[in-house]
Picture (cartoon, helix red, strand yellow):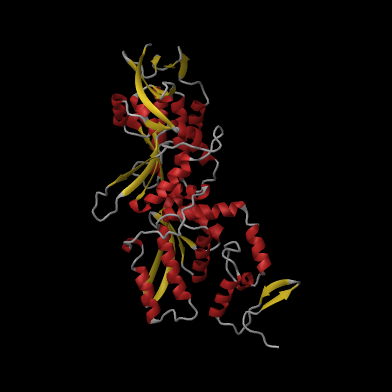
Length: 464
């Protein structure tokens, strides 16, 4: 009895996909895509043997996909939103390329991506390394991953168009090299990447932030910085073109609603500021930034959140150094000669100073530096409490003491103290506003909303 191509049969009571020798490649591809649900199997080498797996087995594999793999796919989507690119090349025929370019020092994260996905290739060049996917069956697998673990920013538009062009090229009913097909693909290509002028997201596109998507995005675009001139002020920021304004707004909301041990529901409105800046180059788009320097939030919410996740890139070293400087500051070591020297050493090999291509290479071994840092962090504090105020042991005076000491206090409508600060600058950092805003609120008695309450700022003089 003859059978039609890709006949569905049963074996041991389970449905099977039967592929016959006379089936064409286009038929096989079409039947495979119809038979196997999106990302129903781990993204390994896509073969006919895998394609012949049963529906039941495929669905079971999806249901039992390990949390580690799910976390990877979410992280990979976030990292792609930050660093990935989709390219279409038309030269007689048509080629599709997905690529992630990183500094050569971060090649390990590319090998991690390559090993976990099971396809693509990693190449090293002069000062950068690249993970590239070009084989059509691998591109198909990649698109299935992003269909189930979608990009969230404006780069999703490039993924969408790239996917449309690939679908046209792979259509078994059309000639891949036909003039009309290439014309349609060229039209799509000319609206992608730097040629894109319309960044409007469809109403159906929902932005969904998850912990590992956000970690991937932070590892690609996050900045952990220290302002040495401003008392070693800590700052975390994410900066994007204005086309990702909506995405950054969603990230801000997500981070401000992270739960903590003392507040399981989370509600830290105002913990992160958001700002826009014009581009210096008229050919560039304006930028949008979210950032926080609010130490209570950083200490109790942000750092524990990031520590709960598994990092993959060298940015974990910047986060670790950033956190260690905070711990040193909390114990007042930034006010001692020994502490300042140690912080300077940390900064000398942090962020871009860490790169092998940096003009001045770090002069200290990182293992020894971490040992010295931990020794100081775990040792005696440079602060002690005297008369209810911080006393700096190394300076032999009260913290921020002067001939006339001013305490900045945030109160509620009834005059109850909510927060107090040693300086106007500290209050501004806490509220994530400019010090001039704090001064204006003090002078004019302007109320504002803080922690769901109407609040005011005032100054009080305190004595030593």
